[in-house]
Amino acid sequence: MATASIDAEATGRNVKTEATLVIINPVAESQADLDDAMRDPPASRPAYLNGKCVALYWNGKQNGMHALDAARDLLSQRFSGLTFIEVIGEMGGLNRYLSPDQLDMIEREADVAICTSADCGSCTAWLMRDLCELERRGIPAIGYTAAIFDEDSRFSTKTFGVPEAVPLIVPHCFSNKTADEIRQMVADSLDEAIEALTVDRKILEALPQFDQIVRDPAPELVFKGADLLDAFDALQTRFVANGWSDGLPLIAPTHDKVEAMIAASGRDGSDVVGLFAPGMGVGTVRKIAANAVMAGCRPEAMPVIMATMECILDPSMGLRTWAMSTGPQAPIVLVSGEIADEIGMNRGICALGPGSISQVNVAIGRTLRLVMMNVGLSYPGISDMDTIGTPMKFSACVAENEDRTPWDSWRVQQGFAVEDSTVTVNVPYGMTEFFDFRNSEPELLIEALATLTANTCGAPSHGAWLIKTNAPLSEGYPFHGTFSNLMLMAPDHAAVFAKAGWGPKDIAEAIHRQTKLTFRQVMLNQDYDGFRFAHPELSWLEDAPETMVTVMPSADCFEYFVVGASAGRSQYCFGGTHSVTRKVAAA
Image (cartoon, rainbow, N blue to C red):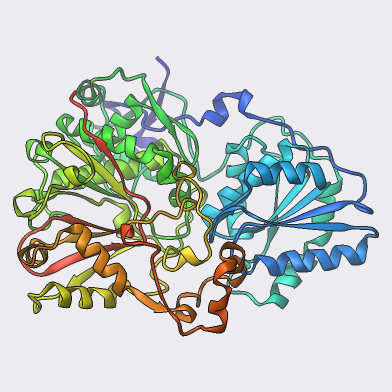
């Protein structure tokens, strides 16, 4: 078996080597590096643009139309006989994509394509997907890309199979810029754009690699030191240097520990659970088990971890989008059923942590983050472009307080049997307290809660229904437009509703009715071009901007999971993805 050996001396310390620590390599290989069949050549370029048809494609990102208007004007001044077709991504809202029919149309009618905008992590990934699809169909394409997303974009073109595709780098994001500022960036990059559309791309002899993604093909790694603690320190130092750590100390994934986790899964270690976005990492049971050990999980938690993996691999979750986003989206894991008590999860005081009483919760949540990093290859600065970050990304996992749930358990509400145990994953933008010690009437609790839920800027999903054309669930978040704002409901708040005969659906209907703002307010950070495209039947709202509209498209966008101890302090997890629930399988 091949190994990579790293000793304490390599970390800068001059020590005598007497101890050796051998671990399982937790980092997956990318399918893009393993399978040449995934790769396609770029399109052949025309020698000139005179008389050509240019597709101008907008993916819904704010201010992108300013860039396309400038490109049309500047190219028309430079070339004769140009014609243009305008294309807006058929599905989605703030982030749209080209449908198969639109790709067919561009292939038939256009000679080249100019696309925009790649100025956040998730929209960069999906714009690069569209560029690669156009190149496969013989359409030379460029995509305006902010400089900070340069490596991110090249990582995505590699992952989508056309590494020669062209993200056209501009200095700044188009978002929050004036039309004149955007025009100047388009003008400054015009010569480069023309060259990219008219000069054949050189085929890369080797796939690009990236400084922020360090991989080692050896199945096991060896660390040496004066004693085992010294070797353990060498492991920690190297994992931080390689970007394989979440920033906190890790448990060494030794063979014995990893094999125990694999055995608890009931599967062979070489079984491939799935390809994990954004890097299309090959997620074997062994790689998942190694990361679970590093997070501090014990073998009895492995069935919960495997169900969690099934959740995030469900296409409706849109893993690629929220893993790469500039937003602070972080998954929260909800466990319902007997297994929570069997493995020692905390469902009461400080259920989200910190503290020893929540060790099992914390370790499960942390496992998901480490798997996203080391199996999905979602690393800060290239495939996780979070603007500021959030402590929720370290770990967020709770168990249902079923003893104090005054209606059917969460799993039964999701369509499972009472004797089942389930895992649910939702990916909110953030979490904030809903504090109310005063009210004992459900209507007043709802009125108070609505002051929290009725806002414009808490997450991109707020008001997004006004600019969105919903895709099927299988197309993934955010394209399908199904959002779940999840409340971790304190038992005392749940009791108020239950005493009045209200259940979760009643609560959801009431809060949806109260969660309203004026059309003008909801559209403050939305793009009116997107609204006009998605909802021409609502154009009258532009002439009646003070009309009250709901912030969310339906009551289905609100969910309630009872957890925690006494006191009227719930936690509202807002702007979440579609919630996905899976049954925990017996090992």
